[in-house]
Image (tube, rainbow, N blue to C red; front, side, top):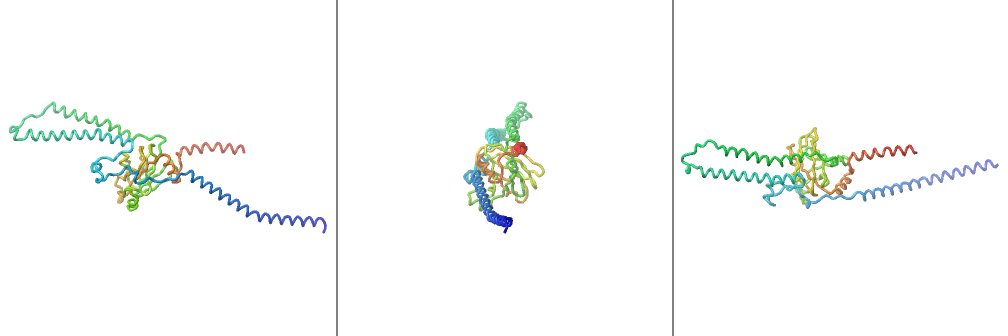
Length: 333
């Protein structure tokens, strides 16, 4: 065997050994890479769980806006619910401090006049009836006084109307309430655009949890407290009406158009309402349940629903800001 053949055989042996080592080490490297990927995924999941706080809904002890029962107080069933919005507080004050006293005084005065006329001018006391046709002073009085009363009522009424249709600020959170036959869908436009479908909770489930039957729902509309809300309504099929008495809020949901009003809730709690427009066979079975939470709790709920924190405009601005940076990095590379 010459030196060339010996060198050729040595090279073949080394090649075979290298190939065998490669075949043996490749699965081990793949397994190590897979294990590392699994570990990284576990770390990411753990960090996400830490960053996304758990969310628990309020229980029956936090119900603040709901109809009153005669057993709890007969007077409460004949007046407005307690109010938890600025417009509701003003409207309730106007009713209690202005409208109710004026109505009471006028009613008592008219009753007194009727009784006085019936007694003073009865046939037994006046066998010869008076032939007076008119009295200028009385006609002036009963014309001027009603005008003054209407002016007193008009000033706070116009102010309340203006407040109810005040445009929400630019940083208001937009929530679109879509009316369907026969349930509601709440679309969080500024938080990723996800929609929460809300149906009436079965009566047995509501009673077992101490919640009001035919008012409680399976998925509440969660909103932040003390934050301007831009509530938009839309009818997906027929006309519905989004109404919550304890928040002094009512807005029709009309097919083909979007209505809009501002709402601010002043206290945490659960507030119930119902569709207030006859919309079909199950109109009476599409309740509204709003759960007002702190800003931190609201953000935790949004994240639990797969939504995002911040408006779409902010996200677009961040994307625009990232594009020049990426272009600059590509240029440097």
